[in-house]
Image (cartoon, rainbow, N blue to C red; front, top):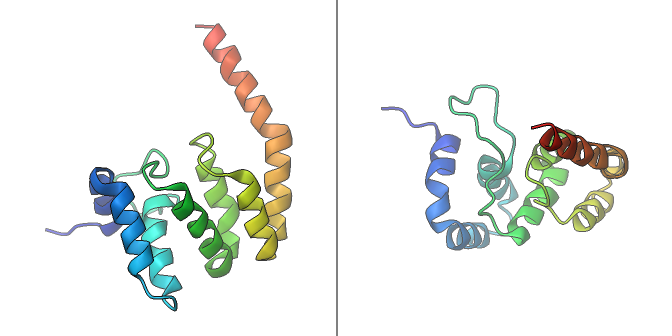
Length: 139
């Protein structure tokens, strides 16, 4: 039997999410950012194209501090993956503290993401909310 690690982690994650995520991310050594990133990506990142069981969104059981840690690692390890991840996070409204996220991206000099996020928050997010209200009103 072959287990696909990200799917397995996601499915079994919710029972002990707060304790597990805090202890795992804290127990990985300070020089092991790649290991920490890989673990957090399996919980929070968009599904890979080969995933057998696509996830409906990022794991909401992950504490906000750990979510922000993932964004910081994402900016360092995979700057081109930040925008797709933030788009994926937008599926779960208020998943991130956007001010902290933008500050992190700015410090890490992933400025195209800052511009995208500001545009998304100012233009697209209100439209999506409005269209959602309109759709509910038509039911």
